[in-house]
Length: 312
Image 1: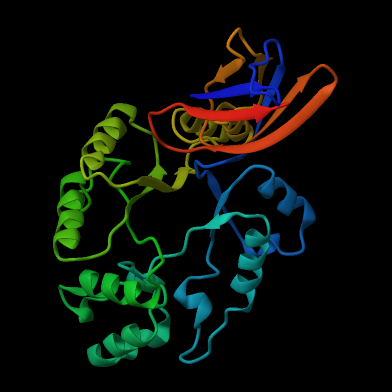
Image 2 (image 1 turned 180 degrees about the vertical axis):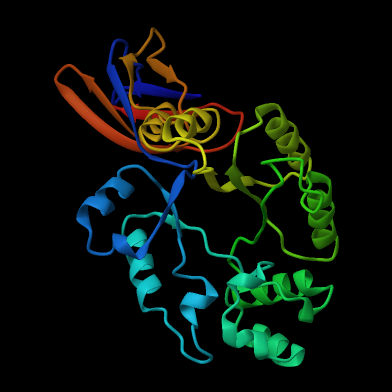
């Protein structure tokens, strides 16, 4: 909730002033994966920046892309992508520091000894699949290395098959909660919970229950990926996604729902105009007796009403 108070230069309240409030940017991160094909593609770029305030790169920051051969580092493409999103004030979610999927390990890594592998991880904490050669404390070690490499990074634990289904005995919400607690109790700087959402058919009651249980940890929860299996037809995919986080035309409807398009009205007998808005940045325009003035303000998390004082 926010209230705009309008007064004249002498401090007297102004009744009947016209107030228009427009949201200019959103705080809630809603993003999309982007690929290197966005570079130089103006239509793709416009579609993306018109809609989203967060991004993740498809494969360009994964280890097999940044170091396809030992010692051959390739950051030219992700650097260009990073420059593009930063120029549009879009936040970027980085890729995994380590990853359990052995199939995503560069081939040359599989020939390293355990000592060589651990030494490389300490020297260069690139995105990497988790390797059993690193031992049972690998998770804690990598959180420590990542924190030392970039103390300002916001570190998440990210997992799949937690919210999609209860059929995977190796990836349940209870084991996920225990792992998160173990890391925090061990001193890991863990600041968020990631959930991949690779759905066949979303189970909404199950999703709500899992989110409620994860929320007891008191950390931000992000859907880091959301998609519907391509084994179902496009119409069914769209129908399922509308229950969850939509894509295509449904995304545009969601984006419009989750922002304050415009709020407008006259100041009341107290010279005030109140409105409810989504978190983010705003510009307010006040007009009265052929005079107009503007001001910028932000709505941040909290229960208290935000008060904006305008003199005209």
